[in-house]
Length: 371
Image (tube, rainbow, N blue to C red; front, side, top):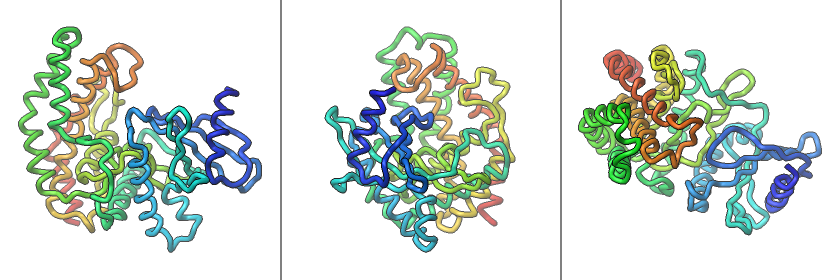
């Protein structure tokens, strides 16, 4: 669209780019920020990603970019011995504005940032082999290890109580109060509400006693989906991306969220619940890779907390999908009216599968923690 291209070129002109930008196209499938790829005329000149930061989810763009700048700068020092080319492949490179700022604010109040495009990389949504799972676990474990000596409290908390089970339960209760009829009274919703209530006491106890009170506050990613990892042409991890949610937290959250997405043999919104089973070999491989990298800095209580994250993260995701469904879908994008309910049901099936295999998962974790 010509008008959109003109807008993007006018925004890009505020940044310290090399070469003449000759092509603009939308990039990626993310739902949070609008992203555009900018290519330059001359072969050998870099390409860039220009992103409009979602002001509704991230109302403090300065805090977001401060966090990203601190984390990327720290990682760049870790990789400095590899040379500039590898540094720019191993972590994101922020392109400053011509006024040496981390982002540009346009006349409409939208905030824009620019990143160097990491060439010849791709991401995958589904993990298809233990080798991929191992590499992903190692990459996210290394990400945490490389940031372990950066004080977590130096980062802004961008999304308060993001992985707080009490907060998610409060949101659900408020939704039930404001929507006492409508979707709330549907039999399938009532069934899920009862299942959440049965588990509430244990989940709240595990959150406080098994994770928060025994684990040091660390810098974590907070969105460890496998597609937030760039791979090279041989499927080797290159760079952890999507750093918008990087902030203080607990390692069990990142581990549990990764397992939630990797171990599921079905889709996150699979209406055929019989498709949702556990891929134990992928769990085993991811855990092995993760602990090979993270095991050197994790405390014993943190090691123990990982299992509780595996159950807590799906539980909280059910609460979030269910809350959104009851409130008529204000947060998650939906493709049909019951989409968020289907998502919640699929996550609940995953949770019951995890519960049925708890002893085996615990054994695998202990096996690799001890090695």
